[in-house]
Length: 382
Image (cartoon, rainbow, N blue to C red; front, side):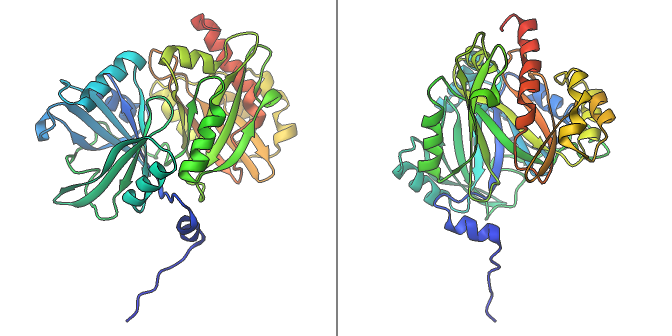
């Protein structure tokens, strides 16, 4: 009997892609205290602890907690006692940058092929392809460098059935999950780079990874009276992985990108957008758990219905919860942004509920950036 392969539009696009990806594998954070960070993301974000690596199962240098919500996966790692270049890097990274993202790991069908293609096209290799094994199977890993000290680990896990990677054991949830999942996927990950380097990194994703340009925001698209930035969005062929890249623009005062670069100490991941099917329930649940969101003036909602039109959520509810809305030629979206989730004004999160729209809330940029500016002014950083 001959077995046939089902060729969906997604698999066909992936096969034609010079650097095919299956999606985001994990967002890996270097943090000062992974145990406490895992508790925060469990209780405040409703994520579920699924795997652990630490001294109890043979990892003497680092402790790592793996949390999931749907297909979204966060890995929180802290150093116990640095003993290798990797441990030394993580310890220095936390000291210099604070808690932040060190790795946007990508699941790929063939890690060796993806690594070879990327390096041939100019990527800086960090980790050569290699196999790691345990009783659950084999994973192939490799890594390349991107902006700042961020990396892309390439993960080929088709032959693996364990909870995360070899070296990790299954773990019980830290806290009871909410009645409904707060979010189910990573929508996009935004990087901030230095002035004049946005196009350089866009070209990197174009040439090295075969990503295409999806959106571009420049000039008045993305400016207020006081600050401005420029942004371009690159995405893989299936639009499963989307990376907006921002750089500051010259303006009267310090932009949010300038503030990030100053306090993070260079380029890095600014925010992670999380898909939710019910942004109202998600915001209420997370707010009750202590998550702080950016505020939006009531005046934003006075004319919102005139240009956004009907949405699943009534304007009065959007006003109550300070949720933003935007519409484009494909549909509409609802979105809201947290305040920074650590003491430094660096990494924050976005919640997004999409109804056809493939955009990023262009109509909300002015309101969003004014909200960020109000927070910058409170911190004395505008």
